[in-house]
Amino acid sequence: MGQDSIEQHRRYVAISYVFMFLALFTIVFAVFAYLLARKVAIVDNAEVWIHAHALWIMRNVLLFIMIVCFASLWFIPLFFFAWDSALWVTGMTVAGVIFSAIAWLFLLNAWINGLAKYFKNKAVF
Image 1 (cartoon, rainbow, N blue to C red):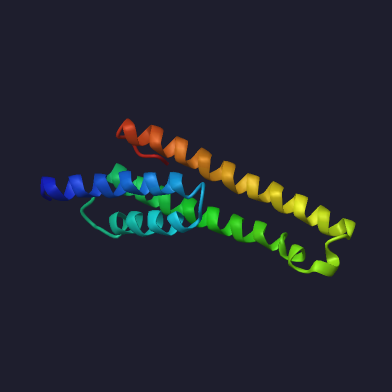
Image 2: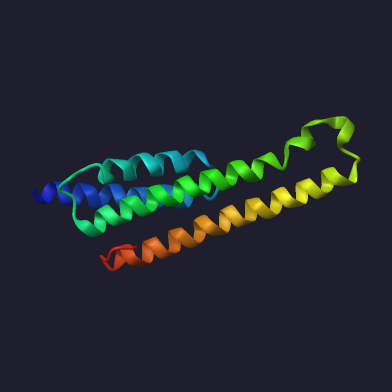
């Protein structure tokens, strides 16, 4: 295993953490974080702690996307103008905001924990 591939794996994981942070603002960057982490996760000769970080990023990004999809379901009644004045629509919107906040806080916590372990060169699990 060459030094260049080790540095490339570290660079991919670092860029994945940057995209993971940017995913807090728009979900498109979550896909980029997943794809870059996947490049490291499928390599056989990666260091163990780098491999663990790649799997950590992939796991948390997938969980974040699933929570965001679930949260977005609660906003569907807002698209129908006739339902806009109903009280249950307001309740569903509040539930959607709560689930969106849970998704955002989940990814923020995963990002902080992962980045703290990355700077220490330790496995994140």
